[in-house]
Amino acid sequence: MSTSNDGDYEVLWPRGSRHVQRSALAPRLDTLNGKTIAQLWDFLFHGDKVFAILEAALRERYPTARFINWREFGNTHGNDERAMVAALPARLKALGVDAVISGMAC
Image 1 (cartoon, rainbow, N blue to C red):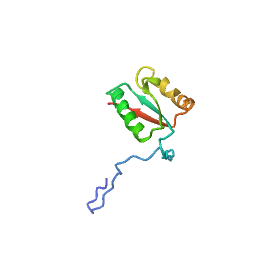
Image 2 (cartoon, one colour):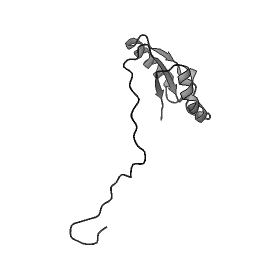
Image 3 (cartoon, rainbow, N blue to C red):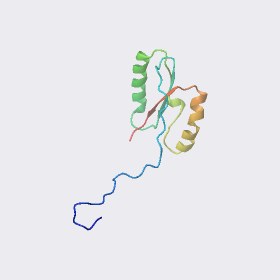
Image 4 (cartoon, rainbow, N blue to C red):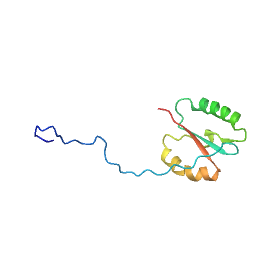
């Protein structure tokens, strides 16, 4: 800091410098009709209840949407989390998934 008393002070910007460049978001789906939607859950909170409610509401709005239940994928959190998440892109592609609903609890 400046020690002069002339009213000018050196300041530091409170944010750090940006180290990661932002990338464009994936294109959004125009509809969920006819799409395959995967449900992912970390087995915390009440995901089993929440996904049942979400799926019912989405089926009303998008009657031709197909859902792959969270039971198909297993726990996204826990002892095998790294392996499960690492294998996820290939698994989603093999299942023809168009969208994912990922439920997490704190």
